[in-house]
Amino acid sequence: MKKILFSIIFIFYSSSTIAHLEHYNNLNKIEMEILRNNEVIGYNYYFFKRENNKTSVSNKYKFTVNLFGVKIFEVEGYGDEKYFQNKLISFQSQTLQNGKKKYVNLVYNEDSNKFDIEGSSFTGEAEPENIIGNWWSHKILQANSQISPISGSIKEQIVTFIGNQKINLYGKNYETEHFKLTSKDMTLPENKKLNFDIWLDKKTSMIIKVSYERMGKWEYRLKNFE
Image: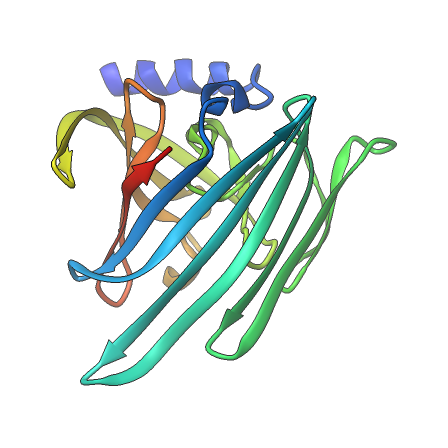
């Protein structure tokens, strides 16, 4: 009953939000390590720039998976979210995945009040309530659907509160809220489904850990922020 009540409150709250940039006004950089089977294989960094009512959040990421000394998977790319008065107005990304190019070009259309998306997996319109599926903003836990920052595809999601949990990362103790983020459409192929465990720091409202399983156990861990 407690989880059901929390979910109802969460859905109601998300419908009245636009963005949560004010929670990150003092941040200049977020550093996350990417691990597979408890081994560091790469990084995911976010950089914040502000000018008057404009905010830019740039993302750089890279990871490499080796098996018996042989590189079997490599991803490298960047993204750039631009906000005006706390509203997302554009997003661009370029990703190289095992030599294959993926991309997203998103622009907010004032006339239609929708996002115009041109991506490697999807081209079309999207409602402005969609969130870019990055790990720097806790708004991803308050959205009904997300846009892939790599390909532009749109996936509806369900967020469930699991419980409170204490976590220690890199010698720091955190009081967190643990959530489960899954795809609403259960008919999607397993490799297309959303299935993440996410831990949110109560004090800073920052996502400090994300985990999922896909050909091994993957984790994104907050290592440093400034």
